[in-house]
Length: 187
Picture 1 (tube, one colour):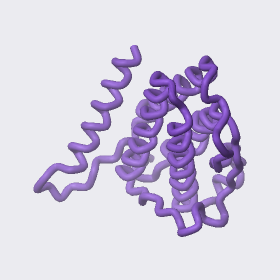
Picture 2 (cartoon, rainbow, N blue to C red):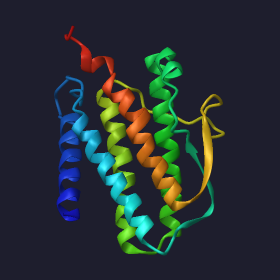
Picture 3 (cartoon, helix red, strand yellow):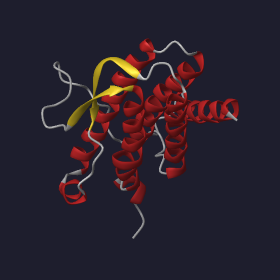
């Protein structure tokens, strides 16, 4: 099942990449508005979390890592502009990429490496999905995350992977489900 899931994920990524790099065509990347793509990434993030909880090794991190806040105050979220929401999600994905990347160096179990590598690939793929929705890529400021971003620190691998799942289920889902480009032409 894991092998099949990996093939499906890689195939989806390959299709996005081929669509994006079509030589000679001036059309922008077609928006990816189907939330089943995100659901797939959430399920894989849950698998990584479950694998980490089942494993005795690598539960602690060498040092605490900064992660995005996953709690969503819907009144505050809805008052933000689409650009502010996108920047918050992009910076959160950047933080998760950094944190999960550091987790990879502290784990020696090859099965966990597979889950961690898959999580990193999925974060990259989500970035591609956001790009297809005309959401600019996040460029971190010199000191790390922009000043207004809410973050916190976690010290265990299971906490980190739980944040990953919750961030995808929360802010990423909200951003994708309300992307203006996905609602054009519908009234």
